[in-house]
Length: 179
Image (cartoon, rainbow, N blue to C red; front, side, top):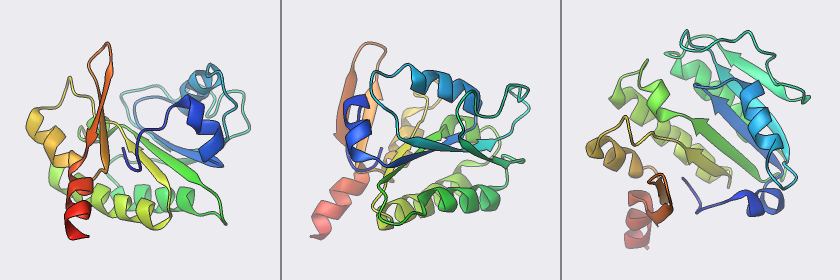
């Protein structure tokens, strides 16, 4: 996760808009989850990466009037990057972008091209002074993969089923050393 840990208490105060890239779940499923938060949620825009692993028969964004951009091929990182760039655009808006999930994309894209893609995305997020949150399922990824992707992050939040642990990502260590 870039730019530190943000929970639902800071969601309302810090962000003007949220962009969610959905791979495993539909925008409608995300909307249901967001409505359950105790805080007001900023406007949400979705990039829906269609896969054969889930049904897209549900309404694209549930009951919200959310914007949904569809990427028809999960292997098309160029189309995904273009859609994510659009999420980061905004005049003086504080934007959060969530990619759910790296693990799901790894089912369609090899590790090296995905790492390069996420490296470029992380740089775009930083330049936009946005918040980037990238999910990696620790149950389906090994230590080597977690360490590799932590190189892209300032902070890494790990959930063990009971509690969160927040540690510095490799990007934060490298940035601090360069100063």
